[in-house]
Every structure is written in structure tokens, then in C-alpha cells.
Length: 472
Image 1 (cartoon, rainbow, N blue to C red):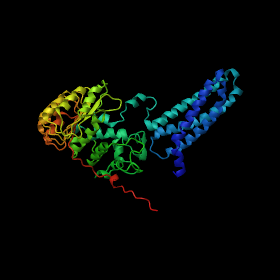
Image 2 (image 1 turned 30 degrees about the vertical axis):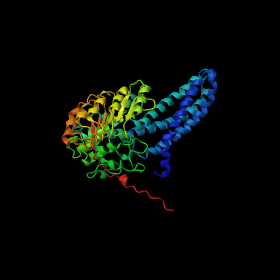
Image 3 (image 1 turned 135 degrees about the vertical axis):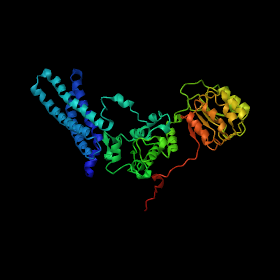
Image 4 (image 1 turned 30 degrees about the horizontal axis):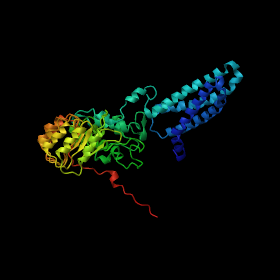
């Protein structure tokens, strides 16, 4: 297909809406003008029909050229194309016959006949739109909107339902939901851009017009992974830049699957990279991405209370401009006074975020925190905290984030951490917890994401892009 016809074809999504709007308006004006007080609208019907004929013809021609690019379900595309042509022809028929009605029909029945002429055109127009929508949204686009609403578009919603990540099937339970959410719009039974279909295993293994998308070897050897990590401005980057992009965790999961020879029925526990896979799954399952600010309202802390905290050198501020919930930070302070911690109990209902990192907090002082029952986020990293101090935190049922990095805690705190029902994210970088201790937490509390540091970022194609200033 040469450049001109390709350009005409690409105009189809723009042109296709014009005949719909114009022809429907002509029909509505024909109906409304049947009433005496709106009879002047009748003069607008003929020019609207003429423009509808022209636009419908232009849409049919552009649609024909767009179909030549391929990548569409042939059965649905054939129906849509034939109905589009029928729309153009019928609009022309209505335009011609409407002007002849006055010669064939008595004045008393002309209005009814003119309106009746539109009914076949409206039916065909609706069917054309339905099959056009089916090309990009599925065959049930018009007649089963409820099923479309129930379709999960966020893979995390399905992945969050996984109990034990190690027992899950990597493809069926993890990779396939990601592909469905991010790739099926263009590569499924309803549309196959590049002749590639990803919703069927045999079709996926067959590949597209550029060859196989999954090959044995490093992940970069497979187009399925390589196109995901190309710079977003690259023409071959997938998904297209205007579509929702995959997160780094989603990309990593596809990489681990491809590197593991892309099996379709093996559980995560059988993969050499199972620990990395479990970590990536937990990243997608992690509810900490949701707001830790409570949904329910709370009364505002009395001004005298916040003024007292400020007088004690306690940095207190609202979590948001319109919220009564509070954040408290001891950043920059080394010594923490009992009087300061005791004053926090006056805002125990409002306090949801507390930073005591890198202070000389003592184990016995943590008892003051045990009454902060609404606390959601707590930073204790860089303190001298031990198991005796952590024990005082077990009563904080709503605590979701806990940072214990750079502390001297050991496996003695494992049982205390397991007892915290609200815990979802735990930071244990540079502590003395053993691998066995962390495994105990993971085994009992699989919903908790444990961050122990030691990150390794693999080299990607985008890391080697070199930008040069144009000469001259």
C-alpha cells in the first residue's frame, strides 16, 4: 500500500464519526419538524442528508484502505465494511427518494413516509457502528456492556488474589493477566496487529509477520520482551506510547517467564529465579500503593494541643490541606524526650504517620507509641531499637508500614511482627535478621512485602541509547 492510500486509511477513525452525527441529526430534524412549531427545521434535512452521503462515502473508502493494513478479525472486518458501504448507499437512496415523496404521496401522509424512509438507514447505521466497535472492543461491545464493565483491566486485581506466589502457575496466574490487560487490545482474536495474536498459546508460539516473538535464550532475544524495554519514543516500543504502559514489575515478570523457556504450565517454585518472581508479584499485590490516609473522617485536633507540640519542638502538620489527620516528624533531632512522646497521645486519633528515624529512641520509650492506635506508618530506622521495643508495637492493629532498617533487631522480633495484623510493608535492610527468620514471616504473613535491600537493576536496551547533538 503506498503512502497516499495508507494516509487515507489512517483518517478512517476521524471520518467514521461524521456520517453518524450528521445522519442521526437529519433523522431527528425530520421527526421534530413534523410538529408545526418546528416546521422550519425541515429545510435543514436535505443539506444534512447530502453531507451524510458524502461523509458516509468518504468513511467507506478510508475504511477499505485501512483494512488493507491487516491485523483485524476478517469476519468482523468484512461485516463492518459491507454495512459501511450499505450505509453510504442507503443514505443516498433516502436523499433521492425523500425529494420524490411529494410526487407520489398525498400531503397528509408525506411526513410519515419521509420519517419511515430513515428507519432502514438508522438500523444499518447502528449495526455498522456495532461491528466497528467490535473490531476494537470485542464482539459484545454493544449488546453486553455489563460484561465489558466486569472485565479486569488492571492485572494487579487478579494477581492480588494469588495466595502463595510460589504455588501459582507463572503463565496462567501471573503473565497471562498482564498480557490480557496490556496487549490484548491489539493482539487477540478481535484484532491482530502485525498478524500477532497473544490470547492463544499456539498463535503466540507461531508469532507474527516479523517472526517468532518468543525464542530460546536470553530475554533480549525474544521480541515479546525486547519491545517492552525499548525507549518509549522508539517506533517498535510496545505498547504504543498512547496506551497504558507496563510497570517495571510487570516487565520483570515477563522477563523471568521468557528466560525460563516460556513454559505454560509450570509453577513459580520450579523457576531458578523464583525469589525474584515472588518479590515482583508482591510488588503488584502490595496495597501500600493505595492511600494510607483513612477514609473515615476525624475531628480536628484542638489548636492548643498542636501549639503545645510545636512548643516541644515536635514537627506536626496535616497529611493534606483539607485533612484533619496528622503527620509528626522528629527529623533532625537526636534526643527524644518522654514529654514529647507523651504529648503525642493528645493527638492519638489524628496521628497516622510518625517519623522517629535516626533518633536515640530507647526501648522503654516505645511504650508511649502503643496508645497511638490509628497509626498507619512508622519510621524507626537508624534507632537502637531491639526486640523489647518492637514488642510494644504489637497492639497497633492498623500499622501498615514499618521501617526497621539500620537497627540491631534480630530474629527475636519475628513473632512480634507476625502478630501485627495490619502490616503490609516491612523494611529490614541492614539488620541481623536471618534468612530463616524472614522466611518465617513470609510463610505466616504472605501479604507482607519485605524489603531487605540489595537491589540489582538489570541492563536494558534503553540504558545504551546515545543522544548526539546534530552537527551544523
